[in-house]
Image: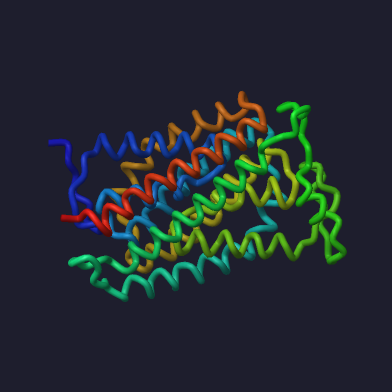
Length: 308
């Protein structure tokens, strides 16, 4: 009775399930400063949505959620617009490269394993998600473990960020609003490029990589990194959604229904972030990344070995 037909995904889904799904993803998007694609895309795939449609539709949904979260973070004063704009050239190039790679994967069909056919794109994307989630989550968890005398209220620039800021590799940029006097511009371009590839290939806005990049490589405080990451995701998700729409990978009904819930959730998440200590925010981000990685891993193992 409450099922709706998704024309591009070619399946029915419960409208309340999709709205609730969007609400939860939107909250986490606003709270952690990620577009939500690292949660949304693998879970949509687990629900049976074709990988390419999950990626394309996820980017369209993230555009709305990140816009809502960015508005709230702007009101809170936690967005570095200069850094967000500097990341764009690399991001746009990376999005195109990732989308081309995904389109190539879509045409590879499937392979046989354990007596059944496994979709090649689904297999490859699942491996990428697990590597990304576990890698970022575990490394962030170790990096956010403070010295015994450290206080959650005190911002301590990570050692890696101090080394990066001290590199002699001109030209440099200054991010005075974020407390960074000098940083090599080349690494800003490379960071944007990597984030763009992840967006185009995996349907993630890049926050899962951008957040630790800003905190541990550049040395920005966690709250400002969250707001700036969301702002940058607005542009990356918009560009990626347009590219995937042209490739026929965006389901408009799926995107609209999930977006309705995520818009509300993103503002709630952004408001909640300001009430959490910076150190605790990094720990929550790490633990949640590992948790989603476990969900993807269980789904992956079940698909390979327990289909019958």
